[in-house]
Image 1 (cartoon, one colour):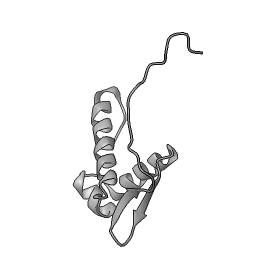
Image 2: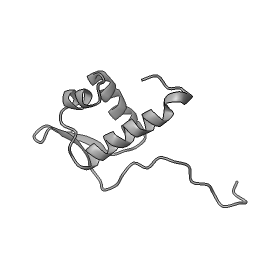
Image 3: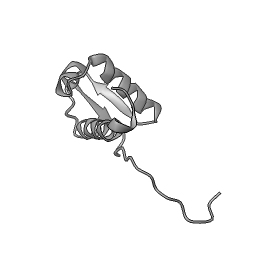
Length: 87
């Protein structure tokens, strides 16, 4: 997926949907997840690695065949303005 202003909403929605599946422990295998989003397995591996670089505690369970969060929490995207007078 190429990043440009026209598809930022689609990228955010994609990441949000993957986050929801990880949260619910319902991703399936990387291959199944790629098929679900009509993308490559390599793209899924890259996304998971990028999320891990953002310190999301993601692991994969071979028995349940799903990604999951190792600690409670969710990914939140957005901008939170600071109080005036910051910096």
